[in-house]
Image (tube, rainbow, N blue to C red; front, side):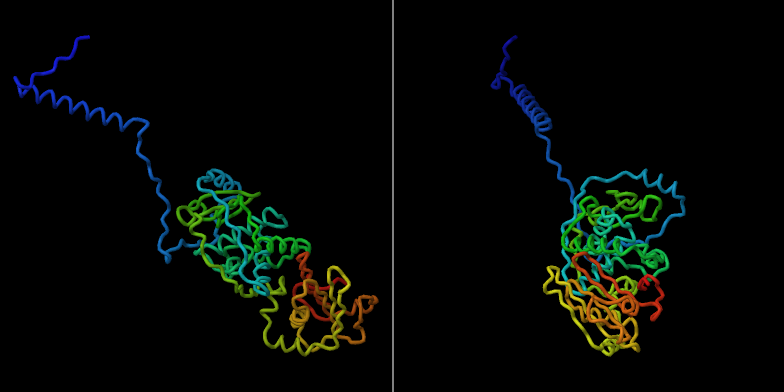
Length: 380
């Protein structure tokens, strides 16, 4: 290899400038090759969803279905791929209120769980998580009952179909209702269902709501498919809404929940309740580890039957366990649980609350007070 000859810059300035230009060009090319190599790629900054203005929230579409067969709906739903990117579980939620407002919130959530998912704990928790996600989201009402019964004044297209399709006229067993209330209470105390993430919508796989294609399918539980909004409204930053602790009573819940029935009682019922009190006998369970209290009351036959619920709730107060029994016939009113068959058959009204098991039930003697819902009648 021959040695490189250096130009004589004193003899030929033009030749010297040519060599200098060549050297500079070589250095520039080397620099480009170096910085464009695989070890020196510039970092790419991934964009984050930007929060829109606070007064701009997505529209909540009613639950209206496309006119397709169940078979076609299942096929179309199956063709939509699950979106797993950015999937996160919801933060634990603790209901901010207490007392009667919390009882009403629990019963609204329990009704959604039971009537939407049936007597199935896994499905119930998934539905309950959607209710909680919604109440935290600025696009929805800020109370549990407000979320569950949103749009229930319609004959169709409500958010939770059981609230407007007549399903509430059907009663589940006491044991099923008790389990749903227990699950609802746990979720209002911080239990989460991580598998549905931040889903705010769901539907069964045999229907096709018109909004399905505009949302991201992120989870399934049984025959239910769960969805979130795309973009910012489906990220944790969107779920920051303050939740109200003032769940108002819902008329459609009155036959199912004494907590709602009490709040809806008109002043005349409160007056009737006060007037209906005759001799009251309280048998305490002080020696019982459970603390079981039983109240025996003489009722005024002229009082409205709905007022008996008000009276029972007032006298039971905050007792975690309370059994209330009333008779309009003072001769038949016993002083203890040791009653005969005739006294038991003559009972006019009964109420039982057991918070430990999540049970609450009000019943009437329907031979004395006819009820529209025969499931409110005592067994004879």
